[in-house]
Amino acid sequence: MNKQTILVTGGAGYIGSHACVELLQAGFEVVVVDNLANSKLESLDRVRQITGQNVRFYQADIRDKSALTAVFNQHDIHTVIHFAGLKAVGESCQQPLHYYHNNVYGTLVLLEVMAEANIKQLVFSSSATVYGESDSPQYSEHFPLGPINPYGRSKAMIEDILRDLAAADSINQSSSPWKMALLRYFNPIGAHESGLIGEDPNGIPNNLMPYVSQVAIGKLPRVSIFGDDYPTRDGTGVRDYIHVVDLVKGHIKAIDTLQGDAFRQGGCKAYNLGVGRGCSVLEIINTFEKVTGRKVPYNISPRRAGDLAECYANPELALKELQWQAEKNLEAMVADAWRWQSMNPDGYVR
Ligand code: NAD
Ligand code: WQD
Image 1 (spheres, rainbow, N blue to C red):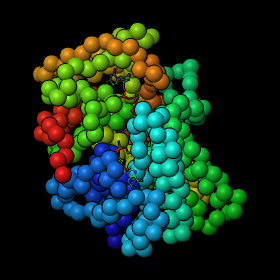
Image 2: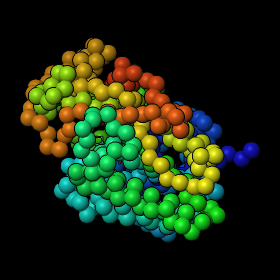
Image 3: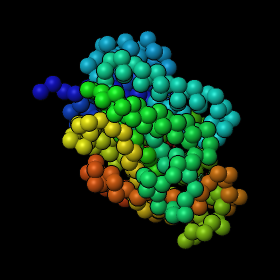
Image 4: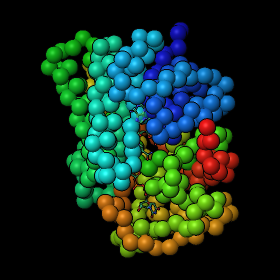
């Protein structure tokens, strides 16, 4: 049987490069479209080192319709995994038009090209950030949406567009309906166990795990813990940290599910990808010190605007319908993040 070809938008990025490894190892052909706005091509060289296989790479912006159409003409694409997007919350508040143009308009162009090529199977990178306020810290897919920043709203808008597409199929009784999985990631951390690929933030990291890693290696003096007076077990913020390799395995399960009976008539469904357990900032720092033997100095700073006290996934739907659950524990996440950081103190250099 011929190998199925998966188009991975944003495939040179943090999660995308890990997805390339898992897809190649699962026997798929992989085509990557990335404009390298937030990544380096070296990540894909490393994917080759890990797997012994090549991806086909196109340096292109998903907003460039003719470039994208050419890729669809060149390859027999079976499914698209759509990671391409900008993801910095603070930057999205400063440059909302840039974020909406890149994320929302970029996705519209991708969907138009897919529709024209009659390729209608999509796995989309959504985020737990789409959820609104809730009485429970454990979020299920049916909880109301209500993102509070332009980045989150760009994800929620894309989710709406995808649901509208699926709804239009049922009105039109389309013979080749859209089949779409919206994967709402909680907090992906860690790296491939080889230490060859990982998260390579530009400048000073916004997110906790890369920040802690850079303190441990001596590039930054200390972690500022944003608040120790939350109503949580130790007063610091609680999140659902998930190993990036577990996360990308969820995408392969989603591809399988989209091809199965549950999506025979098409559809668009959201799934949480999280461990289902919360972990505090102090627990992250303590585990990091224990696993690596490095000191991680910290101080307590004021709360960061927009942060929730506690947020973790109810991952039951993904277990039931995708047959997926996270397997790696916090120690493995930290050990793998540290291996990547210590083998690549300056990230990718090319
Ligand atoms: P990343 O920045 O490492 O990867 C995104 C990739 O998309 C980059 O390689 C970038 O160059 C590329 N890209 C951006 N805009 C593009 C465009 N217009 N055309 C072509 N390529 C473009 O980020 P990541 O952490 O790997 O995130 C992947 C996806 O998952 C993003 O959509 C992000 O919003 C989503 N997500 C990430 C997290 C997280 O914490 N990392 C959590 C939830 C959701
Ligand atoms: C985790 C915890 C902070 C940094 C963000 C985005 C979200 C999603 C994932 C894409 C919080 C605390 C952090 C620091 C700290 N991305 N912290 N000191 O905020 O849960 O989610 O990334 O979709 O949209 O908002 O992740 O890693 O920034 O923070 O004390 O220097 O660590 O307050 O409790 P967050 P994070």
